[in-house]
Amino acid sequence: QQRQYAAELALQTITLDQKRIYLYINSGLLSSVDSETGSDSDGIGLYRTEILFMLKQCFPGEVEQLEIYRKVLKAAGNKPVVMRTLDVGGDKPLDYFPIVEDNPFLGWRGIRLSLDHPELFLIQLRAMLQAAIDTEQLHILLPMVSNLEEIDLSLIYLEQACQELTSELDKIVTMPKVGIMLEVPVLLYQLDEVAQRVDFVSVGSNDLTQYLLAVDRNNPSVSSLFDSLHPGVLRALKFAVERCSEHQLPISVCGELAGEPIGAILLIAMGYDQLSMNQASLARVNYLLRRVSQKELQQLLQQVLKLSSGEEVRSFVTDYCEQKG
Ligand code: PEP
Ligand code: MG
Image (cartoon, rainbow, N blue to C red; front, side):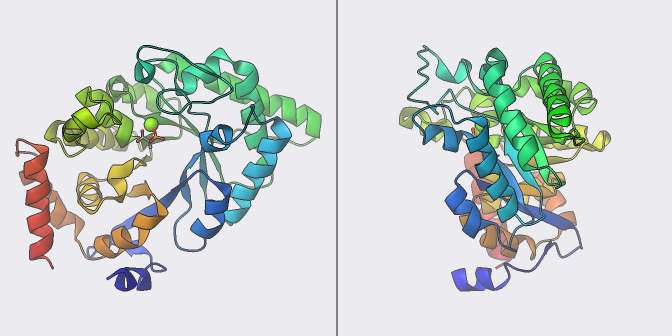
């Protein structure tokens, strides 16, 4: 079956009722970017810059980051690349920057750390901007945002970086597209305000699930409770795409859910048209989505949302897929 999936990989993802779906790759390693992007995806939907930082013995400097980001953009051809600013903390430690906390997932993570260390943040933003000079590919994504002030402050630093580079390089460096990760649940209720500030939203369904359910995403003792198909989580995901659509704010999903067949089906049913996933999931999700009709999936979703557990959702959608062959 793998061969069947691969045979269609180069074809665009269009549902039976002609809805174009954009499939992107999640990446974090330069070596994987080369083989991953090619012509098969619509671009890189999540480039996790923290992997580069985790592989080093100290913070990589501006020139080093610039060279790597430039290679990543080049490997993507002229397709879009969503580069996420440093997202360490939580389950992603840096040996050379130890963080000791009782509750790491509720602690000093993602954008919080960058805003508390603007000198590091600015180096990263400057490296990204320089790498993308003369291209229109760059999208900058802010992780773990939990309030509007973090967005506003990040934009101020980004503007500062653009201005510095404009005067240093004697070339006009303009603002790239900027987005936020929707992974802290409270932002679901501030999407109207978010829409006035950023160009796109990317749902981190891994962390959004963790925080909605209060279940550690990596703790084996509670792993059976971690379920992105929990009907309450699905309602939150549906709510997010509806709110963003009202503002014509582009929204994608880059958590694991997007690369799982059941997840992809339900997300398309809700109205998502951009999914970002690991390379390994791309061919299968493309194959599947080319065989479904969004209209029909909307009816399926109505029934799914009435179910009472993730387990029921899983078996209901699996039955549907089996009926469809
Ligand atoms: C997520 O939280 O869903 C996500 C994509 O980010 P990460 O897995 O890197 O935390
Ligand atoms: Mg996350």
